Image (cartoon, rainbow, N blue to C red; front, side):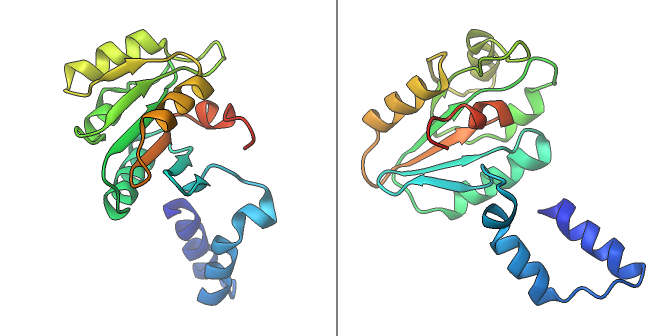
Length: 165
């Protein structure tokens, strides 16, 4: 979202006439108009299950802000990342109170779920390793109560593997 708004501002500075209402309408209908999925997308209502493709520091910070604003009893985090990024700063942003399910996308770039769990444990995040994204989501769903929040993300590839998305 910050990138979209920065682009709109840059276009306005170049003389393009873009109304605030057009920007709001475009953002509110981005999935329908573009097919883009996985941006704070609701997968299920009870327990509330959300996915987001945020995969860098700014994206993870936005996800954490959204989680804090979303009412829930307990937090379940299905997380996977890629192996060619420094993940330590991203992991430090994640909520400590969550129950984590460390997974990995089925791609060569995926960070091994065991390695992700080890790195996460170093900063106080705890949970279990469930390599397959959908298996991890199933286990989180079985463990969650109706008032809980399940989040799936950490990588565009993790979100892309969610069945039925």
